[in-house]
Length: 296
Length: 297
Image 1: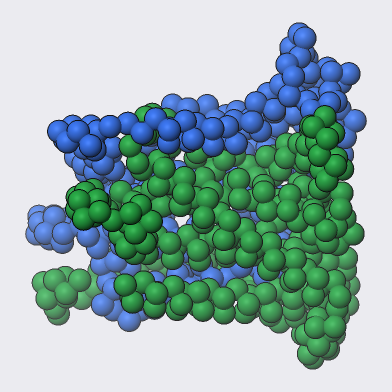
Image 2: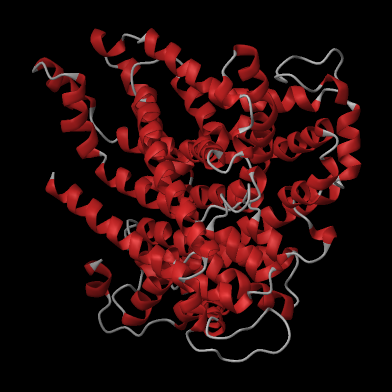
């Protein structure tokens, strides 16, 4: 980067560079920053989404922490996001390692495992919905597995598992490709040297593979958790937030309350808290994971 | 452009190729047990797809049980019914228009913004702009959702054009990130030569830099295409006119109607998934190497 600075030290910057970024900056301001700021503004009001409104100070924020439905949404969203993040990373890394080893039809399998990523989660969710509610119980009945004879989506205790299965099925596709990209950066000679030294498969994984794909592990952990915390399509197609409000995620609640429940101001306050939660978690995660990376 | 695209292609495929070419017996041996295991695992992908296809071809009284059996005779009429019920041609047109529009506008504008930023990173203004765009990666959509719906309605952008614009703007954060990293790896000498020849900044960008961005354009184009085509949340909240519905939104809206007839619903799902699946079937290698390239930059 120092070369351009040295190459043309005193030359005036061509106006074209400003014109290149100006429209994008203006549009970004209008469609991203302004909505964020109006959102924060309305979070201090009792605006219903229509009609008159007035400032109510911090009431929305105080009420949020007493609201069962909000706390429930945070509880569900976090449980779901953490379980899914762990599951998807274990599965994706295992599959990626299998795809990177000496197997036949590598490219073909790689192509197959990426398919879920090119499909709409909403539509796949409708298919899974039917599988969970009709096919799985029918198969369980035929096999005499009593625990599964009623749909897992019909019970408040198990519906979240259905959401996890769908989300992991879909998200694994992308994570597998990222891990595969990481694994391909590791030279094969390292493994050859390790096997000559008699290192076990686990030893090779923990001392070569895992440390060397550290950056990819960080990307996948941060992105998965961030995406799962925003879960929306999966809920709409599988459970609609039910039974009751047992699988109502934060995004679904903001959407419902804000657009249909006349809680515009209240839900923007919820969204502001949610923004801070996501920022805090992303930074904590990056800190921890990067320290771990560095220590190797 | 072809030269860079070609070498990038080679480097991503190189690892596959190397294993088979190098003469080292212990590395060349195929692990058949692992291959079988992977094949079994890949069934988890195929089962839902198979299920969608057979269900779409059944008559209502063939449904029931586990649902994995084949229909006696394929009920092709399900597709005709789904075609008219969801107004498939209209939804397909909308999805196609929005996706193509978003991809083109994204490629042309985001690369340009990234170029201006990448070449002026030493200036406070551009560096600030870079972090301003990147910071948005941490902002969850729900906080924007409620206000932006009011805004687009007010501006008359609660339609396909509005969506194209929003995908282009919201994609900026991530795209700038990958483009800037890529552009900074392109040596300045090419541009300097062009400038000495009297080329303007615009000419330098369109004639020298943009053609070199081929591999990154592929990556950004693929990711934008997948996003715009499959996205449900933005169309759900932004679009006000039912005739503007995209394919996923149409499935959602007609869900109520389908409750009685799952076969027609599944025919409709299959039709909505088919276009991108077909493209993927032919462009699979290219799509995957594009996504991989994005992750290593």
